[in-house]
Image (cartoon, rainbow, N blue to C red; front, side):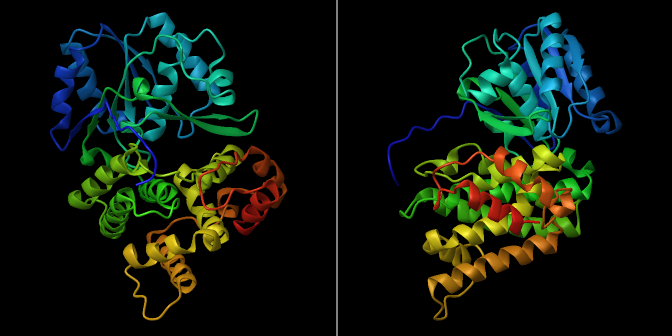
Length: 388
């Protein structure tokens, strides 16, 4: 394990088919004015909305609502929510939905009492909140982002062609999250598959960094093997509770800071994918899938030993006299075959990107350190062209 680190995660999780039963007790800990945040109509069609409202009414809460939170929440939607939350004098934000709704709720929690422009403060200058933060709770309906147990909040600014995530500290993490795998079973197949790859890539972003003998890497390999196994079952039978529960639990542990301990981490696939998303508004997990292999094949020579280990420990490829370079190539080929098998989008053209957008997408790509190769802009353009 490299370096010095601390680990603390304040989010309390309730997992399983009876998890919603814990909402009443949790709500006793917060004020009267509850802001209920959700996306489209699925939470009402499923009956979940009525169940939640019944609990809040039983707890004698005053409820205001923000509906229609989109898959890639916008700065305009954030500003709209700030007005509603201020008028309601919200004491608590309850997010019901997938990762985007949870992200939105966290962004809102630090924006309501912010005296500055939240977009400029948090997403351009990357400052930390210095105002009162409204506590957040999540009821999850889609597995993928891990937003239910982390401080991340991604917001899109279409006018500026930017999609940026700010990872806030412990004080912004959800106070509790309710995870019932049954809630994920109403998702369209496309969204389920996108979520599966989001989980996989979260692990890869942390795994493909460093060369030390690191406990976090062993944990990551187990999570990836379990996810691959469960994904194949879920794709063939989306109603398989065991597979969907394993996917949901893996999503949480993939991005709650556990497997990043002792790691430098990479996150360039997310930077590339989010830049593509800023131009296309495509589903997040699919943007990651579309840029992953071109990126990994480009950086593989700089971290060949870890990519070789990825082949043997995640994909079960025998060394059989292969060099590290050959193993690394075979591991990425196995990953590509799995991605195609479960139905992921494999290029950004299918997501609506065009060659004329490449320069703009490159400009919107934040270049990070921490992986095996720090890219320059021309390399970003090269990888994006290979992703078309």
